[in-house]
Length: 101
Image 1 (tube, rainbow, N blue to C red):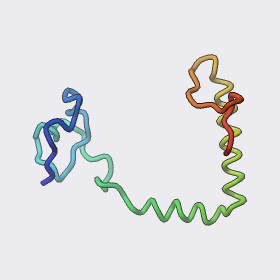
Image 2: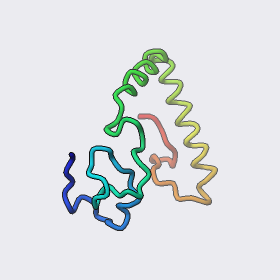
Image 3: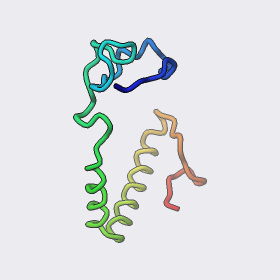
Image 4: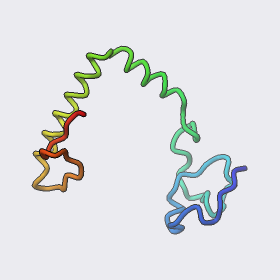
C-alpha cells in the first residue's frame, strides 16, 4: 500500500473527484469509491512514450525539427494576434511576438 500524508491535498473537498489508484486503500480519505478509477492503465506513467519521442526527433532530423519549430512559432504568433482582443496573451517577446532564440 502507498501512504499519503494527511496534508497532501490542500483542497480536501476536491479529493473525491481525483482519480483513484489501485495501490491505495479503497474508500480512504484520498481514494474515494466515488472516483472514476485510474487515468491510464499505467498509474505511474508509461516509459514507452520515450522511444516514440526519440524516433520522432530522429526521423525528422535537424532540418525537419527546425522547420517544425519555425512553423509552430509562426502559428503561435498568428493565433496570438487573432485572439489578443478577446484573451490576454501571457508570453510575448520584446516586439510583441514569439520568436526563436
